[in-house]
Structures are given as structure tokens and as C-alpha cells.
Length: 336
Image (cartoon, rainbow, N blue to C red; front, side, top):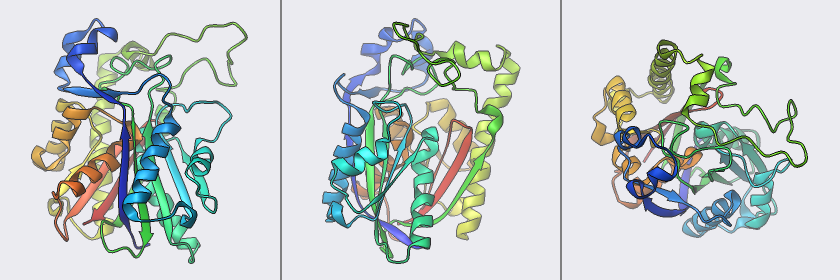
């Protein structure tokens, strides 16, 4: 289904130097330094996920000269939990921006959600021939009561949202193809043991401390070899999903002008670039280092940056690729 991106918007937390705040999150300072990040973005305590998402969405609508009442679909992808349980953040976003006619869809596939949004729009346009405009939003607002933004993962999490307006038959930044792979063996990797229906929080009970890297290692029985095999699988499947998406688009990996990955640490970005046979300079390594990881917003933020800095030329083919808890791997191929 042929559509392109008409406009972008974003809303980021306040920038802060990693060196200035790392000791708030971990004693393992050297490990964090080795990741290579310079800054992250943190929102004020009273700023929620849908605040960021709404600001980004309205900015994208303004950039695209689209009235929110003309939207047919709003897709919101989130990484962390939203402000409330038993609550649809996508429907709340639809109401906040005044998109009264639009269907609202919420995706919670972690960091890959910003990519699966593209397939949602393609499918929606395919089955509803009269629909013309859709809004894609990726957002991350780290819930620090549950998640240590520096010590849970090998990525440093930032708060922010990015949005894009998609238009049927729009000639710029056209979606060419998409591919998603899932592997449910790792569904429990990031699961919180408490707070769900299996073990709900009870009145007066304090939530567990924020998860850290050791909580993830517990899934692998603290076996370094098993963990290394998992990390190898992660990057191998990124290459596989990129190759599949490129094949669907009728291009090769060598044809790609840019590869936008997660805003990962320097070592992982280098490893994935090597496996793809793509120079690191053609990835988002610089943007990642300067801003941190925004979960489901990474790919749209990077695409907006490339677009607004005139880094893309007519006919350039860009692969947006990454992974998310579940586990899921995704790739969307876009042509400038």
C-alpha cells in the first residue's frame, strides 16, 4: 500500500549530560561510560507519556498542514507503561489532539513498536480505500519506579516522543516494504513478577525496586554463555529482518543509503553495522550518542533528523530496523 510521510513532530525531555547523573543510577559507572552516550533526556515528574505524545503529534500535524479532524487513524507505540493501568493511551491521545473521526490503535511491542506502526497504517489503508491520513506516534516515558534507565539494559533510556503524518499516495518518504519476526521464547525476559493479574499489588504494599541488569541475567540463570548466545541472536536477526524487508522492496542491503537502528550503545551499533556490511557513518550512531534511546520513538526521531538536516536525497532508500521485547524484530524500508 503506497503512502508517504507528510510531516514530523517531536517532544523531548530536558537534556542532561550522562556524566552528571550516572551516579544517581548505578555504582557501575565505568560500564555506563563504555556505552559511549554523551547525553540523555529526562522529563519533569509531572510530564507523562501522553503529554509528550500529544505535543509531538500536534507538531507533526502542523508541519504537514493537516487538521486533526481529517485523520482516519492514530497509532501510538509505547515502550514503558503509560500513566494508568486499565487505560488506553492511544484513545486518550486521539481525544487530546482532537482527532474525533480517527480510529485509535495502541501498540506495546517495546522498542520495535515504532516500526510495526508502519505496517498498521499500510493494512488500514489497504482495507479502507476511502481513508487518506494517518498519524504515527512513538513515545517513551521511563517509569523510574520500575525501570532503571541506566542500569537495566545496555541502552540508556531517554524520555521523548516523535510523530509523523502519513498520507495515501504522498510522494515523499514512501513506505516500500516491511518485515517483522517474533520469538516468544523470550516473552518473560522483561516481565515484572508483581503488579499483573498473576500477582497484583495489594493495598499498602510497596512496589518492587526498579529492575536492573541482574534481573535480566536471572532469566539466563546467570550463565554468561547463554546470555552471549542471546545477544548474538539479537544482532543476527536484525540482519535477517533487514535482508527480508529489502528483498520485499526489490533492493539489496548494499543499495541502502542509510540504516537507522535503535539508539543503541556504540559497541552494539558497530557490531550490527559490520554484520550488515554498512559503514557506521551511514547509521544513526552519532544521533544515538548525543541523545540516548527513546524506545519506540527512536526511528521516527532519526528519520525526522535526516529529513530536516537535508541528509536524504531523492531516491535514497533507508532501512529502519530494530528489536523489541517479546521478542520482536522489525524492519521498514522507506524511499526518500
